[in-house]
Length: 90
Ligand SMILES: [Zn+2]
Image (cartoon, rainbow, N blue to C red):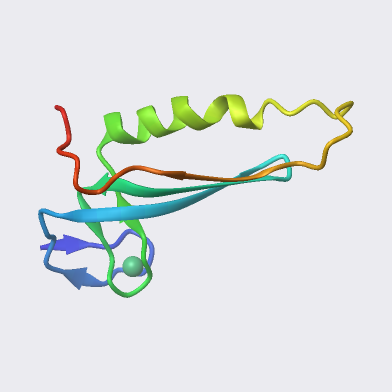
């Protein structure tokens, strides 16, 4: 049993859960799909991620948020996809 930290819904956690997370910072939007998750709440979609998985995603997307205000291009909308069939190397 898992309990969602957002909506308190109780549900069975599954072994093959994949999360989609949207990160917004400084006007830049990064959507990351296919993140291996401990559980994903079926009611609200909140994902529970292993700490080291969350850290790796943070490391991946951090440079995308280093967008200088002096740049003339509009702030990008980025989508990153992890292939869901690949096994997690832990
Ligand atoms: Zn929930």
